[in-house]
Length: 497
Image 1 (cartoon, one colour):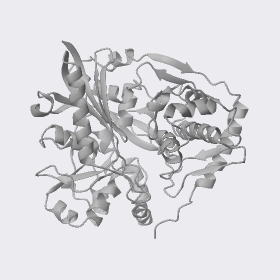
Image 2 (tube, rainbow, N blue to C red):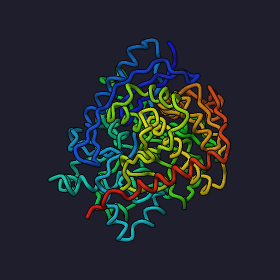
Image 3 (cartoon, rainbow, N blue to C red):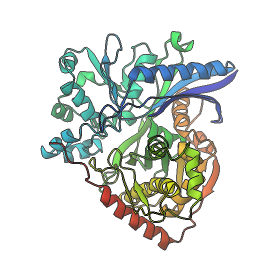
């Protein structure tokens, strides 16, 4: 038998399960796509039962494919901020999952800002008043879906982000928990006291009884129901996807940073054992907790990264698959002055403008699909530089290198342009599945599969390093033009009354 850890990676567009051996190598991967629902402009929803069915199916398939695997523990990582509400007695969801990209609560955030909550929320939670986070999503459910507030106050309902929902289902409803990395994304969690904030709960009229217990990111929190996976596998690791990716990238030392290019783009820099407030549009967040210690990070969240390439394929129909975007980008010397600002769900860090909208500027009769495809890829790198500039200003340090992961890192054009425009080396690891790997590491550490973080760090391996090649003056010029394009996109949609 081969000792292994099973990681469940529930993302925005797919559910996956991966088995890892002691060297951190994938033994097998199974995945299933997740349907996106857009019931109104600015609304994004998932079917909770599809999330669960996909995750259970992939877990069973991964285990069935490797009957020689002796699974010692299970780790869960998940799309963050996505908000679910279900019946405590039956586990039945009472409304679709409201996805992190959803913007329906922009008006509520404006009202909270007018009532003076912006500073208290930032100081206590490390977050900004924005529809991105779970708090106003949960309040919307209680306020806008008939009967839910009364049922919540009677104790009939329970809330969770995706990790909590999966843990509830995996344990047959016996465990209602989350970890600090996910709790710190709700806008309801005091990252200094490491507990739910009663004042913010009162301001949003959210009953505390709805909320899960907060347990460490690396600890046995329960066991999988044997009827689901064949035996009672210990569930020993839980972390939001971006924090898990940073853990999988072994960003254990303050100043180390990683960027994930998934549906969105997320840059995290480790800042040590105390939260660091941001003055430049970043978030202060819990990275993870283990062995009685909590690590913190500065984070810049980009709402649209890989989703821009999906839009080229599914919305415009100008590419057949993601790989074609790189071929088109290389077919032209430049975008010809075209800039695409993919603010389809508003702009995240460092702008935090829920009323921004997607924009293409600089079009001429000579602009074609190659220029637009290249502009979409360049936009991902420009947005990352936006966040890097804020990190440099807040932390006062420049990362020695940017470790990267996510589905887009197979695109060499993107990573070279990222190194060029950011003026920072970009490092692609040998194991690209760093989000799932981080969840596996957290679970494995809890059961002694790995001895400590030093052993994990020694296992990180470089596949390729991209060095900046573009002259600094040229990179600065292109970045200034990008900033002009962003200004055209900002504030486009009318605020809600």
